[in-house]
Length: 356
Image (tube, rainbow, N blue to C red):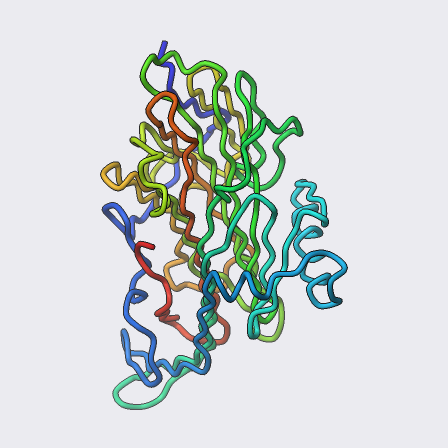
């Protein structure tokens, strides 16, 4: 019997997929160049009105706990409430908040947000020198990782939440489970992770772990509405703790044509650890595994046909291992969302980046 296996449950139909990205660490199209006012990309003129970056020191300086101010209390309660809607119970006393420019950041104890960015722009279609339709763009991203100063301890509470977060498990322990939310002008990206360890991994040289990741972008209803058109979640060994991960042994979903849809489920085994969780639709998502860099990610792209759902999520699982007796892995997480509003046919973004 395969000790490290995936099994899909409840699949009834195949889904066609159009692959947009290929290779290992990748980025959404037209999103790797520095943003600048008046730049033109793909027949669009992009005018950036605000482009802000907040580093670890600034985030730490602005951090507040519950009852330290009405504005940060509101951010904390918004995060707790949004997680409760997804069936994930969070104690407000274990949430940090910061007001950063026009953005609001919330993160749970056990995690560190080392950078948060946002970009606000207007894009105009240009056809034969004449201005066409215009649209508004908001891009959000942030990077986070587990706090190395917080000791890992088995968590007895059942794992609940969106996508991978809904995992039930046996034959192992859950060592970490935290989420972070970055909100600007009422639109948000939430990134979450969980780390599991099997009671026995049947190896005399390695310690295996299951790392579950999911991210959800939430737009805004209005006239016109704001739609999430790209959601990008990635993880790899954190650059400050690279030696804690010796390799990536498996991942899910396998590829963009993986047969899964909303309401199906997957069972994963890692040694004695058994995980079972509900799936979001794989058909509109492209996985981006890279065994060399020990990176895994999933990108949702609506193909610039916007008018989709106001909320969109991506999720994935990766199996990593450390040499037996080594320190617990610390993964670096990247979360990105692009939102568009208006009649723009090609919503060109510039903020998304590859690597961190």
